[in-house]
Length: 90
View 1: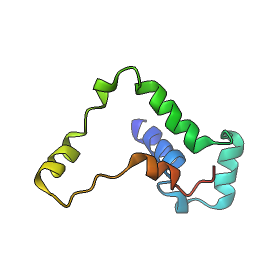
View 2: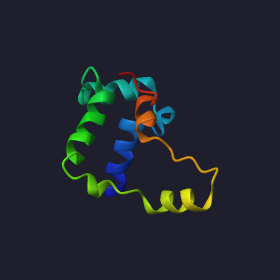
View 3: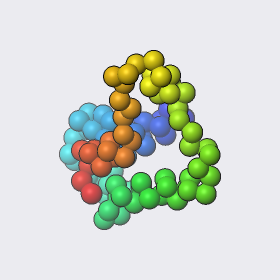
View 4: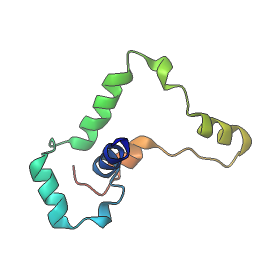
């Protein structure tokens, strides 16, 4: 069940596996679960609203921290750019 929810969020927010679904399937999903006009910015705002009062819980991911320490060429992925650059409109 967790994997299914995660896959849904990844598809909806980051457009992971976007090309695996036809335009008709994507349109049907959006009709069943409409998006706000500014969905990408709204989801980023919702994430911010959920963490802004507890910034200490956002301390870096262990794996990214290790790579940053050991590999000077490592460049962490930017989650916000992934959302804004997803294949979905909005």
